[in-house]
Length: 222
Image (cartoon, rainbow, N blue to C red; front, side):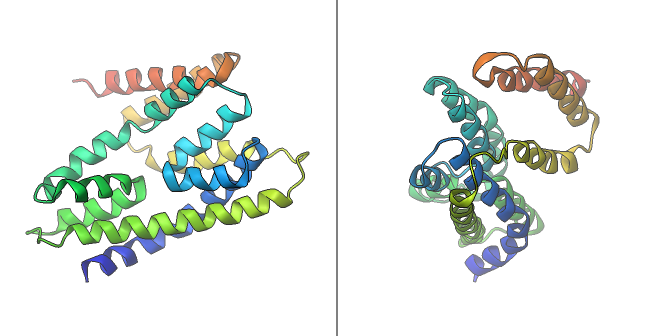
């Protein structure tokens, strides 16, 4: 019962997630990744923003350590997600916590934490809600990636689709800019990214992220 409640709660979000999965599949092939590695990344990494950035780094032959470091920085927000949801999962065995950590994405977290916060009591099977939401998103992401990989194989290499990456992140970020700290972070990141665009291996992304974090922290300090 809990599993299917979580599964159904996640389904509306797949409408917005699926186009991003397809765009990733197309961009992965255009960056020189094969169909199998592109699909495997969705199954193993399972982190849309990190996957988009990785395709860009692969396209410019960035060193492996830089790619790993960039993914780490981009996914640091998951540490905050896990800290927020951990109190509701304290009674679980370690194997369950490991499995649910793999499924902890932006969309799965949003649905699950909202459900848990509404409840006056967390039952022993509440983790099944999280599992259902996570697996619904996982399945939708794999399917949309596969469609994107199939479409990417049919699109001529002369078609430049890099601009879709920027559009994707604009669509993700803009609706979340609801306070001064977030707005400051977005503005600083935009300016720094433009000013440092000439840096090799997309290091402008790391510079922009670091400066944005400092800006948000400075604004939010009392």
